[in-house]
Length: 345
Image (tube, rainbow, N blue to C red):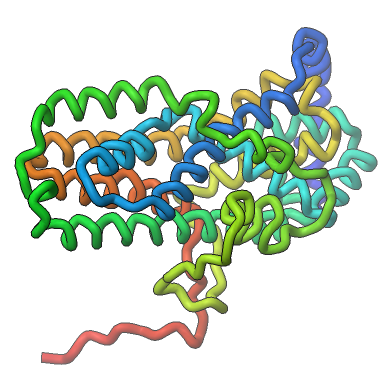
């Protein structure tokens, strides 16, 4: 738990905002937990399409067009909100974090803690149990990033392997119209049926239910387990026992996830829906995804042959997005970390 001096300052600020927080709660009648579930659907839609892209074959022009549509049909704003909501549910499973939030509320007052995490999202990860919540979030982000980049590798390799096939090394007709199509898909976002109906029962998690296992919500194989079938071994250059710390330039995404999780721990998401809505919108994550989309459009605009569209799909529709997610973490530097030396002249 944070120091008493810090908490005293926060409590004083909180007391000034209690009346405002309570009045806000009075007007937020819709179910914020329902909104969280709805937000998660956008992220689930992308991960479902990643699963489809990994399983499907691309052996002709029509199948490549379908793959392009799958990777392009995701709105950056909805994706961002969905990812933050997914992280919130993941962090809220940590019993240590939930207990830390509730202990703080018991000591300083529930309204004070609610106000503190809404005005300063980084506050939640500073509570007792925050380190455990952070670890869970980093593990989840690394796993999701790895599976996306794994599929990106497949499509970039595909781009090279199909160059000798007549359908792929021919000039892509109506490329301008194709680029406009994927732009429109990205603006509209994935359709309602992009998430399989049988996913719905598993797209939320119970508060304080325990750290995610490999196949459970937020776990390493969660998205694969939804689809079923044999385990897919992800290829990664990162050692399996590598430890990660928070990348300070992207820490705000984790802060927002933990802040919403703290509101869940205090059963405050319904009464503070406006705060939840604001917390779900992380500007840096959204900007990263926007850049990935712009790079996809630019790459496709410069493409002449069909196989080049496959490369654009892998590099910008998948790899860049996976890196946006994985960028919240960075490998920890230890005494055993290899040091690259510079040869003397």
